[in-house]
Structures are given as structure tokens and as C-alpha cells.
Image 1: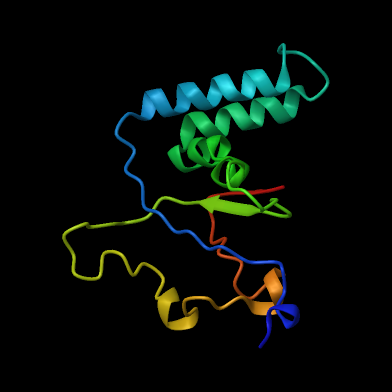
Image 2: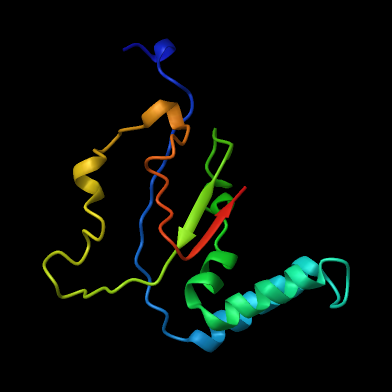
Length: 137
């Protein structure tokens, strides 16, 4: 396939397992981010803000997802522009000493390196969102 026949859109899949070492610091930073996003309490989206604050106080996965911005991952990469992004986080049982600790969803069997279904468009079958926080831009 020549370069002119390939799509200029690429789906980049990144999977990470993070350990929350300081839940108070994580939720505090997420609350600060929410305050900056919504401005002074009592404004028009007060109910939405309260829901977001409650979520990040109660769930580290929600707090993390509220702070992660895919644009930050690629904003300094020359020659690319973020067109669409979605990301999710969820609490998982993870044992770093287990031989299969990294293969959480057996996705390696389903997705080979370089596979990009439908030129980066989500077909709904492989959304990756399986509960927890889910964000889209």
C-alpha cells in the first residue's frame, strides 16, 4: 500500500496501570481543577459541578480521569493535531508480581501492533470503556 493510499488518521492506543499512592493529593488536585473549570460555586452549572466534586472525592479513577488530558500527550509532537479523543479509567485488581499482570483484557490477541480499524473511527466494538470514568473531546 503506497503512502497516498493510507489514511492520515491514526488511532494510538495507550494502556497504563497507575498506582494511587496519595488519594488525598489526587482528589485535592481534581477538586482544584473542577473549581478552575466551573468558576465560583453557585453558578449556572451548580448541579453538574456538585456531581463532579462528589465523583472525584469518592473514586480515585474518576479523579484521575478528570485530570488526564490526551491533548497534553501530543501537543508538543510536531506534525500532528488531535482530532478526537476518548479515555476512561477504572479501578482494577492488579498484581505486579503475577506473570499475566499486564494482560488485563487479553486485548493483545484482539489488536495487533499497528491495527487501526476503520481508519481511526470507533466502530463501537472496541471502545475500551468498561466502567469507571469516561471522557471525550
